[in-house]
Image (cartoon, rainbow, N blue to C red; front, side, top):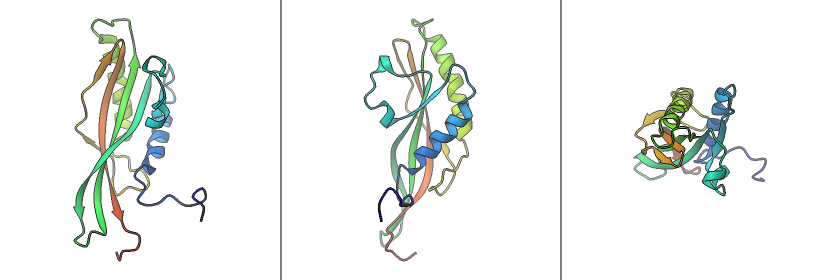
Length: 160
């Protein structure tokens, strides 16, 4: 079976990404200026000064096992997804006040869009989690939210 025509594998850690991106794009589509929704792959070769803003970055940030079956053939995992509001505002670059205000508003909209959302290929809804600290660099403000979402990782040949 070719991978292009195959259904998504139930153990694909990155499968939720496209659904998270689509949900954010729909929810933020009416905002002006236009909000870009970007993945880590979209940002991989982009210099900071050339990145589109305002934006929401969707980045998978790893997982932690919650529980593992005794035979090791299945486990429950919590995956962390970072949702980072990225804005550029140089009006008050010294204090960053305008950038913080704009990033905070964007974070609030993105956060409420994803709270309780259950992407396909997951075992439960997205839940808020502790996030990294915000970043500020020459008018750019990065304000992250972190969400946990549970999946079941299982050997497809094991008995359920």
